[in-house]
Amino acid sequence: MGFTESNITLDFPNNKWFRFQDISAYQMLCGHSFKEMDACWFDEENHAFFLIELKDYRSGHIDDTDTANGLIDNLLKKSIDSLQMILANQLSTELGSELGQSIGYNIPQETKLIFLSIVDVNESQSTYLNFIRDRYKNKFKAYERLFHLRSTVITYEKAKEKFSWVS
Image 1 (tube, one colour):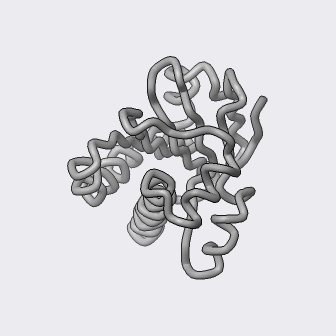
Image 2 (cartoon, one colour; image 1 turned 90 degrees about the horizontal axis):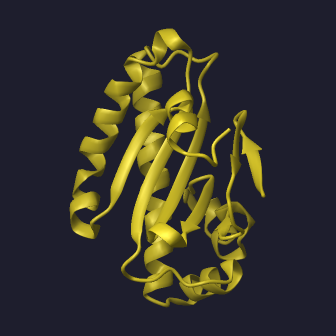
């Protein structure tokens, strides 16, 4: 069961996934410069909660500095805002509790949060994605340290190799 966005299909092995865009708690915030990751999935077996962003840049030019910086800033904003939604759930704020009710399960405190951005690029641009990943991780590093998070930006090809639920 899954979905396709940006020509990337995610087919999770269980139904513990959701999209913030479908949750009313998020919908009340999105008109106020609040952004979201494309999908979230709870991998109970590995105690991991993935927050996933999907981007198709095959026809774009991430080797252009302005485009690369825009992508980095966009990924960062989506990561931080999505983190705030998860923290609101953990803190049982009004909207955070509504999020928990909407998704139908709790995210245990000991769960690892993993921010995964999958970017589909032309082969000629895949090495430039390393620069984008490094810049993103540098800007997200304080959040990783503060909340013991993991994050990465990888190509669609690498994601298909690494995760059975990416196709």
